[in-house]
Length: 122
Image 1 (cartoon, one colour):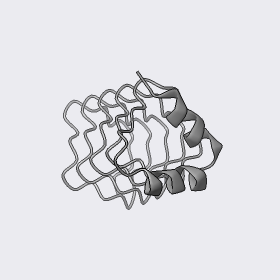
Image 2 (cartoon, rainbow, N blue to C red; image 1 turned 60 degrees about the vertical axis):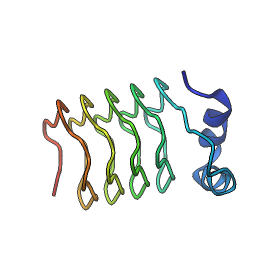
Image 3 (tube, rainbow, N blue to C red; image 1 turned 90 degrees about the vertical axis):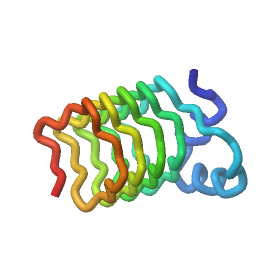
């Protein structure tokens, strides 16, 4: 289950979150099964975060860092992930319908069983 303290920090502002991440690099980021739909997470450092089953539909994650994050079964439908860094992210069984993944680094990402209907992969 998600760490409520981390959710409070993340919901403040991305700049506050990113500063906290720099000061706490060894803290495990557990945001499993949370509702972050429509969240403005532009530029957020979510690398190595556990976001399994999280609702990120319609969220703005453009230019976010999501390296080696777990997004299994996450709802990313209609999300903006333009220019995000998703190297090595696990997106298996995730819903990426109508998601903007343009100009995104997807090297090493796992899309096994992911829903990619009308997803922009340009």
